[in-house]
Length: 68
Image 1 (tube, rainbow, N blue to C red):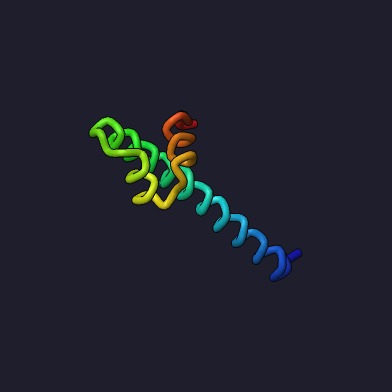
Image 2: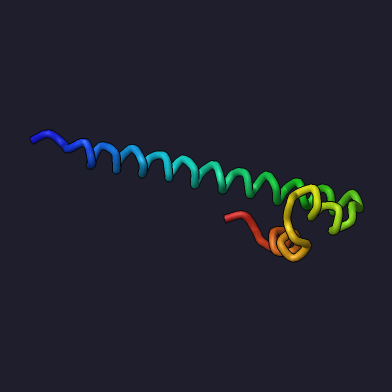
């Protein structure tokens, strides 16, 4: 029995979603690391937020979060 085109499309979409999730997690970890570095260098949170395209609260939340 051969898989239908719909099932093949579902599998492809699921693989793309898994890949996007991995990319998102890595990008978030990279951003968090860079936020910590900028903060350690004395860059103002408002500037970090502006450059990261986040709210200041978003920056604080990422700084407080630990990688999983």
